[in-house]
Image (cartoon, rainbow, N blue to C red):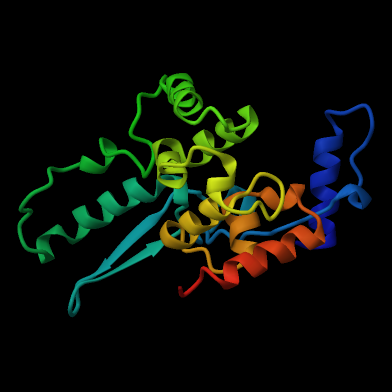
Length: 214
């Protein structure tokens, strides 16, 4: 992230606090780039945030996708397939719009069922600190049980490199979340880096060295 961007965000946040938020308070940053379709808008802020699909049929069908974001990825995929449908074999199994009814990994519980999900984890894994049980439920949903398995105590989840991250959770991240580095685990996947000291981060690196590629 650039210094002007940091200053801009701090100024925006400061409008809501009695004590201003200043760049010196920032402990970690990241910056993302969103591809926007050039619709002729005079400023990036005014450009459309919708995705745009362009199909070139002059040769083998080539679909170009402009814009889009991860929160609309399923709808974008459906729109892309609809555009390509004339060039693809007939649908064989799934009905149109099936992704709108399919749960994301770990999300196979009712929309108002988080309290029951959390209560179930606390009942079946009473050794978990309340804050850890809540974090695992929020981060992994029903897949939290894939991490906890048959454990009957925190010691069975492996060493804790820092915060409340366990070796069992790291093992899951490597197997199911494409985690290969400490930065993957602590920032991209969990944001637990906010709660770790440098020696904790090194402990995570050491733990991952024995898990990645194992």
